[in-house]
Length: 190
Length: 190
DNA sequence: GCTTTTTTTTGACAAATGTCAATGGAGCGA
DNA sequence: TCGCTCCATTGACATTTGTCAAAAAAAAGC
Image 1 (tube, rainbow over the protein chains, first blue to last red):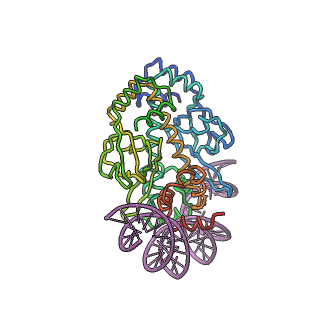
Image 2: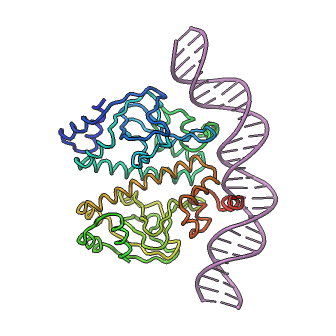
């Protein structure tokens, strides 16, 4: 499964074969069955995780037991808890598999070493961070500006692929509404 | 006013005097009166902007004329529209001054040149992006998980300084609620 | 193929939040 | 100081969204 990671990396930047070998040397492939945890709240997250196949979600569970989904991650996305990663504090998030999933894990210590050694990798990571920030701004704008229906419409436009493979109640959670509200919105859509 | 920018930079990383001079050479200080625009929707944003003093807001105006505030920026924060900056597309945001404000502007072309030439600057920028992303995640979590009252409580905890200098109706807009709702929440707070 | 679990939908009702209109106060500028 | 604009608050009411319970539909497991 490292091949999928390599394919992604080469599509995003020009890595030398030597650099690629360095990356492979520190990569660990992990397979997750549906519902299996990649991270549980309370644990410290110490990896960089690339999704080679499948789908994951990052979420919290509140005092009433309700789940709130921060992010989805499908193939060619990265996931993890950067807050826990950089602070060393226990994570408040859970990450688990929505489908059977394969991830490539690199311990952050080794990842940061390679980031220093491989400028191309560092630039790629910074570009991903930049894009993640821009995506977050779009989501914040939707969250504070849109009605439930508008949020769902925007979600469909922005992530059409997600709507096909993610259960509705998880989409509702991601959008900050109940599954009943989303169901009613869908009924009234043109 | 460049001194405030210099003070900030030196507090965040070890710049040489030569590097600082390079930065000063491309910096332009701009003073804004209360209500004055730094950016108007439709224009392309081409700067990096550091707030030396005062307070700005970034917001959109929807079809009904309602304003939705994406961000506030006070002294020692950065502001601007990175989406417009990196895409070259017209901005969908307005940025204007909530108080009389002084900003330090650096044209992005020159800023990127210095970022290449000064590794310390590049690292600082990447660190800021990283922090901005983490802050965005916190805000998204609040937006999809919390009630209006919880959002306001978290805001007070996270940004106590903002509550003192920003009009309530703007705080409400930032939190994605109406000014009436925020007024009622405040009445019922312990 | 059958059973079980998960997911989605529906209805009745409750709660939260928004809308509109009006008021009073605070602060600003001439 | 006067007048004006902006801001915060309040009440009445409308709308949106959530809650709870149940059933139907779909998917998963054996």
